[in-house]
Length: 299
Ligand code: SF4
Ligand code: ZN
Image 1 (spheres, rainbow, N blue to C red):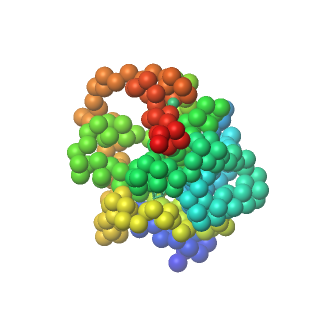
Image 2: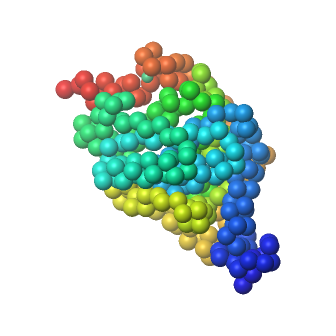
Image 3: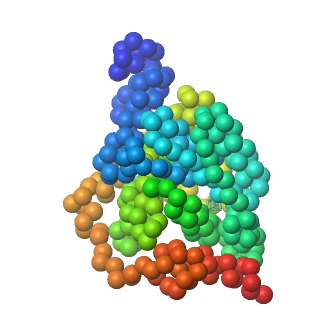
């Protein structure tokens, strides 16, 4: 079958949600257009701004770094090595190869250097699952590194955002819903945060990496087994398989300006710099500085 757009090349991919059969070149342009659309609609950044792209070694963040570089934006990758083996080592090696091959600079930090302990060590010391600390620590160090940049971009896809909306919806967690948005403004000298892949699905980032020959870490995190976010993500994908386009309509409907206003909440918490590291917090010390005290100095 021929590509629906150029009507010349053989179609190599069928995008069920849009009823489109596309050749490789038109698929790549299609994905890039979805990214440009999100960047423009939510005023994420301009071509003059310096963007730090958080990469994990997975398909989504590497596809994002590649797309933004290809579109001519000024990008630098950032990898935080959490010390979860064998995942961290494999991911790091892949990112190093990506950086050389596509000529993109990547900054690498080790959690054991910048925090003083790896994620498995923190989890053992605190006697709680690694996942309870992972997001907070990643956000903290992305933001700290992001101070040297104008914008911090993450590879959250349509699937991630729809699954997180679904989880918040099931709990009617209006507080989280009011903060779920593809752009978070800069605060207290910390860079603006954006999610340019909001209109791109994980199937599309996987196909993008395949067509561009981007090698990525596929195994997944050893701590991910049984995580409820993965269960919800899978359920949403099943729905999307049966009713193509529902995931996109679900998220797009939520982001509709008028509808979102219904979820906006007045918040009386005022952010101030952490007394030790300057990170925005509502308390005297931020959660990571408090965590550090407990992991490194308690008992
Ligand atoms: Fe972090 Fe996800 Fe691994 Fe949990 S499963 S430790 S949240 S990367
Ligand atoms: Zn702090």
